[in-house]
Image 1 (cartoon, helix red, strand yellow):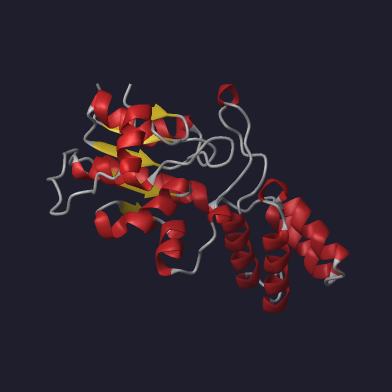
Image 2: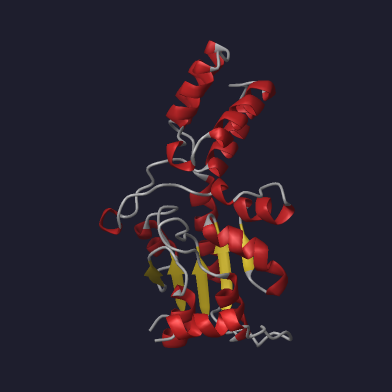
Length: 243
């Protein structure tokens, strides 16, 4: 049985992940209760969270991650839900990596929907069908550096992107919104041409973390000095997800 388990979905194709970290076990995006059950049943040494559900089912709970850390499991996160939870739990020992994680940890990113995308089903490999706001941000940074758009145009486009529902975000939609807002036509034309080749910062972060783990020895961590409080809500959680 593998000692490393990875929750992965639309951020990176599983085939790419296997080529980087082939000795890991890969699971669908994480949801509430998944880490708790995994630690109880498989006793992994390290758990990696890249993607997670948050809308059609409840998101992975902070306390189940604290419980996993308390059991000595090494927890890592990057790219999407993993970056968000790692930033929130870094002080308790969860390890984050990548640009998205650093954005949340520094406070530059604050909204959960920065990493949200709508995606296709598991049998199709969870293809992303919208573009995450963090990827739009990163792409606009690139556009400014290359002289494709001005900083003033970048700021306005970010406003338009934030106003969109996460399911509706894409480069095509953002360029269309810029045109509708009567932003400079030449800049919108250049941005439309550039966008087709822009990489995903979420995918880059996921690859970066997996490459790092491929070089690190797999080992359980010692139990932390703190102890998670067993509240009524935790006891109820154990009753629901402990079967």
